[in-house]
Length: 192
Image 1 (spheres, one colour):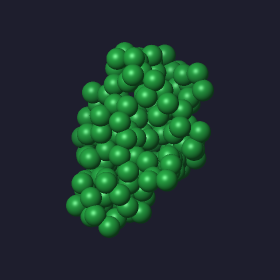
Image 2 (image 1 turned 135 degrees about the horizontal axis):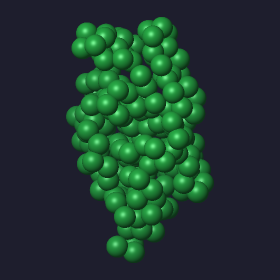
Image 3 (image 1 turned 45 degrees about the horizontal axis):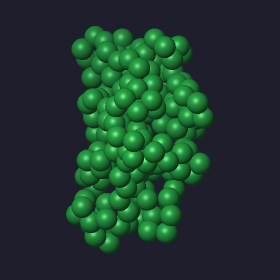
Image 4 (image 1 turned 90 degrees about the vertical axis):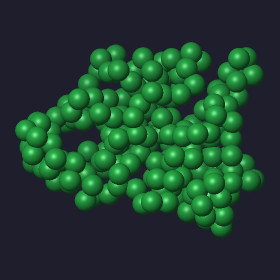
């Protein structure tokens, strides 16, 4: 991942683009989402895990001393209205391109897994085992789980819809957040 982040920063400098990033926290009831956007509001990361958010900011600062990361107010970001619409049940997916350098940094298997996750319908779930099979590795349930944990765009790539055979399974934002997201979608899915 470090090489792709470094290449992304180099490409910005080659095109004369200032490495200005916006960090923002979005709160919707019991849900807190940590986001990082790059120049042109390109979405680099969406996570429920504050430590992942901080780790990426630290990496960006490490690679380029000129990187500026400013805290943005939630209401000033284009993601805020999309997230608000999602939590209110007005949308079931996000029209955001998967062009984050963190997507490019994934292994071929991770990219296949993320592509398969993106296709899981709203208020539906599949198992890690089924996900691994659809990504071309029928015996790779554990690797599929690891790919879910490495997902740089939570909600946009809805990895909360991937569950263990025996229950909800893990989630970078914690099991309570995963269960709440599944319950929200299940409730909204039955209403629609």
